[in-house]
Image 1: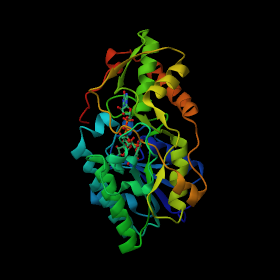
Image 2: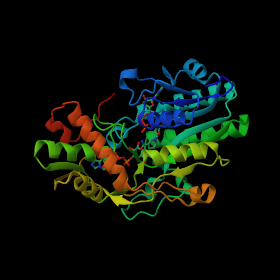
Image 3: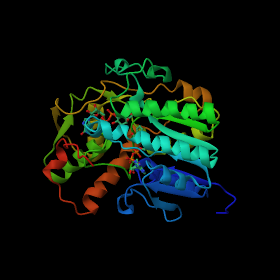
Length: 342
Ligand code: NAD
Ligand code: GDC
């Protein structure tokens, strides 16, 4: 691309959502810089047309270097995972505040025009998520604050820091609160995976091994909404280009129980599974859904890819990872992973 076109920085570009975002930005013909602290071998997607770099963006020097000549920053860099990870890695999750901080400072110093921050539904008050038939969470439900311990508080703090960098320095920051994003080319094993990928892996393992029993964390009545990654990538760019700096929900409003999630995946796999409910496993909140009133009011759009169609693509990809790489099906794939302190 011509040097006149400012570069787009995707911080966390070696990650799940980052890999899909880089791909979409490249498809639009943009100059993209993807930066991640992981070695390239661990990136979910490496796009040769991007300027791919390995760097730890929690260091101010690296954040400054990554931001040189950049017009738009997407900060997707954080230490994160499903409940099996964030419940037992609270300090690690909070250390992401160094990355959030240094990227904001570097963006301000580099004269960046737009800065997107990936926040999370984990900022929402626990007291409003105590029942499976939960009232969908609206943006105001983040206060009085009672965020997810560790991870949720870092997200809420970094949201507020992004707002203050707009108020005090004029950096045009934009924030979305992602609600459980799933899809291919993401984490599906090892302890950081979230429920959609975990259930896909367990059902595929059942199908491949012939032992049709799977372990489910909790009683399965707990509810969530799950947003397919293509909706996330589209909404992220829409919000970044938009004029509203207020944190806005970016999530599906299709509420399902975890038992229903298992029904859908086992239907896709065409097997009937026996369910072993582990009530001692990490469960997070009892119910969570996205109220999409604000995103509809501002943008006239909300995520719309159905859970069934998103899971068909996700299950197929995970099944291929498990068979294409001639991976044997260890029994451990069907159990709660003791969170790896990765
Ligand atoms: P991911 O773990 O796949 O991607 C995050 C990437 O950031 C990783 O590749 C990691 O190596 C990188 N990273 C972390 N610290 C870094 C640092 N100091 N320097 C450079 N790179 C660093 O996670 P994801 O699912 O793609 O999530 C992307 C963003 O969206 C994260 O900020 C996450 O908190 C947020 N989010 C995701 C979800 C979801 O359901 N996936 C939900 C809410 C919020
Ligand atoms: O891990 P998660 O997807 O995160 O869990 C959703 C629900 O699925 C939980 O109640 C969990 O107990 C249940 N579950 C059942 N079986 C399994 O095998 C399993 N693995 C997993 N992982 N869960 C299982 C997430 C955070 C993210 C992010 C999003 C934002 O919380 O982990 O970091 O912030 O929220 O929406 P979840 O939805 O609780």
